[in-house]
Length: 224
Ligand SMILES: [Zn+2]
Image 1 (tube, helix red, strand yellow):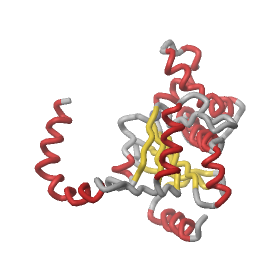
Image 2 (cartoon, helix red, strand yellow):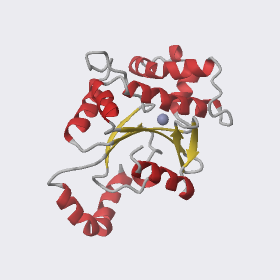
Image 3 (cartoon, protein in one colour):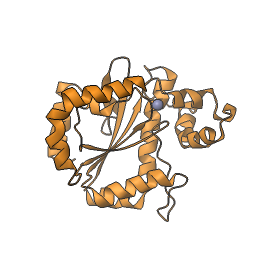
Image 4 (tube, helix red, strand yellow):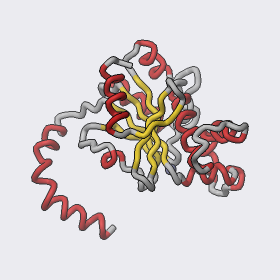
């Protein structure tokens, strides 16, 4: 807490004068084009690793960057908060991209590997069931990200699983069929501070460096 309070004082002195106009403009309304769904982990810092500014990202964060699936009636299977945030952002903001971002050394993935049934905290035990299918796929021999440690392989598999959960939301499906929404799977490697994007064409996560960024930008310009 002390660090945060000192940080506010420092922000007022050094950063606020530079961003005051930006915030004054943003007070009139937000127009982010990206919904970012990431883990609550304190080391996952999208505003830093994607150099995003205030107003750029609409953010949902939870343990394990989960997306509870929706039923056929459009209602979330368990978490109304996340379902509401997905609905709000798609209906009220110019969202054209949704990013599900997992990360290395994720405590939720460690917990799934240790065994969800051994978790004594009831809410956590229940919540992590949304990662069960990713865990089962790994147990069934998915060799995805085979060069990674198991919990990091699971993190990547879990990103893809949560993207499938996103597609259960009628609003998401409608936008995808119209071609007005794109879904992305990202993976943040904490140790290297590197970000990877999943490519559905070759089924691999690719490091987003300058070279690969050009490919992604070309795809974005082509509306893919
Ligand atoms: Zn995590």
